[in-house]
Length: 232
Image (cartoon, rainbow, N blue to C red; front, side):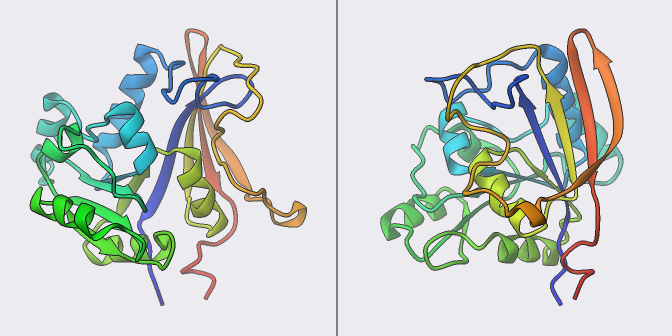
């Protein structure tokens, strides 16, 4: 029986449910309050998981600032969470900031990953795991993380990564910032981008808390029903 980390998805969305406006791959809605919210949530995680497209678009670092790193160490934890990326292409420039950060770095990919790119990542100190034929098998990825001692995983998107995790029932909690902006962008990225769930099998969550800061709402939802490992 597989076991999985407690997995939290975190995102900031517009009032019309988009991650970013048309013509941009960057999450431009978030305020300073939301950025602090993200960092505090990241500080509680043992590992952070993002999709390769998000890493490339935002040149993400997947770390916490020094003050929060010190808090982690004071509790007997590593200064930084693990940096995990799901990517079939494994196409990251040598200048990518996440490659230069401290702490374990892992890429979950598939048999389709170009060997030269895999070797380049491994030379940069990244552990590359091929866990699927065409795309990374995220159930296997999370089970592997659990075996490494990762108890809490924070998934920071994008929507193409969150959809298969939701489909597999692997998202336990959602931290959602509702930002006071409307994109009006047909087809722009949403919280979960995929073919759509059947009407009778929509992932369901219950609202746990609401916090207002200025014109933003910080929503916390927990999954209803059993986790995959509990249902077997």
